[in-house]
Length: 112
Image 1: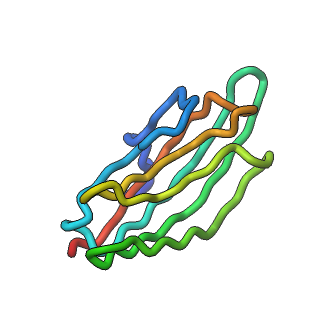
Image 2: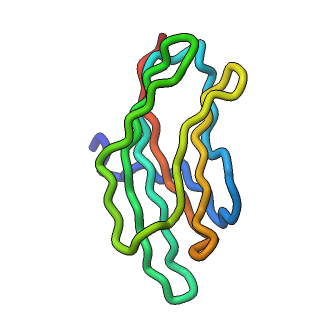
């Protein structure tokens, strides 16, 4: 039954501005992978965007690779990863023409 119900516990709805949706301590992790989905299904719209982001944490910096990008209706916004002090932040910034959006994400990782 592993994975058949999906990972829908991590949902942030109503995002209108740049929003940090996940934060982890960089000292505890060596590598993390995010699956991220953006959606807008209100106001007669049916927009979806999905991507995978891998992050290698080498102790001082973040090395990021994004791949597997797929969407059905253009630019919904940006997803970025940043180091803020001793934390890694996953940040979503919606396109002003599409907001508000909903974000669903899953994180898997390897400890340092």
